[in-house]
Length: 209
Image 1: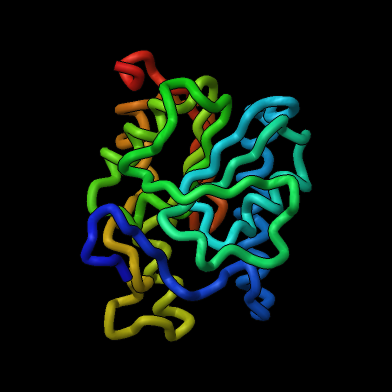
Image 2: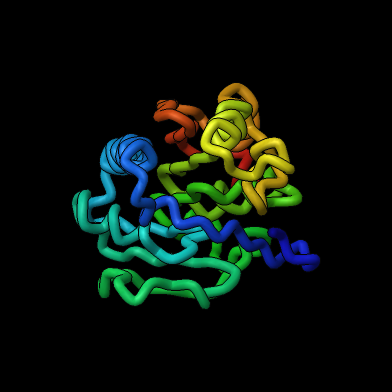
């Protein structure tokens, strides 16, 4: 569900990281593997990392424990009410809206924004902010449509919504996410772990304008 306030974006309530379904766990492992490999390619060791839209912080904890340690990892979200008690203690947290990130241009070496753009009324505006504050790399992911909804339907989920996960108001195919990302980023690598698209890019100079 998305709050009526366009600056207050909230996601769905299904925790994919905690699923007991073996197929779901296999798919999530593929997603985490792809995100981690691209995060490592961004060479985070000793650098500053910002995660935008961290949710419970489970991805942040996974990355900081499975990649060369950054000098700083700041996890932000429009609300921190759902942050996990198991959040790695090396991770800082701060309330911030993706639409108005309170940081100067080039503030962070690496910016991570996974499973967020599909929840936004204006994903282009959010991506512009992400690219503005990123100095070296941006790591993005969204569910890959229409595969995501088809897989939800196949498991009997959200049938009345034709498989649409609550809170998803944008529906990106791989090509659509690449096209959006290319407006702000030089695309370095694209991974497609079923059913996601994961992109690593470098911010274009126009993103700093």
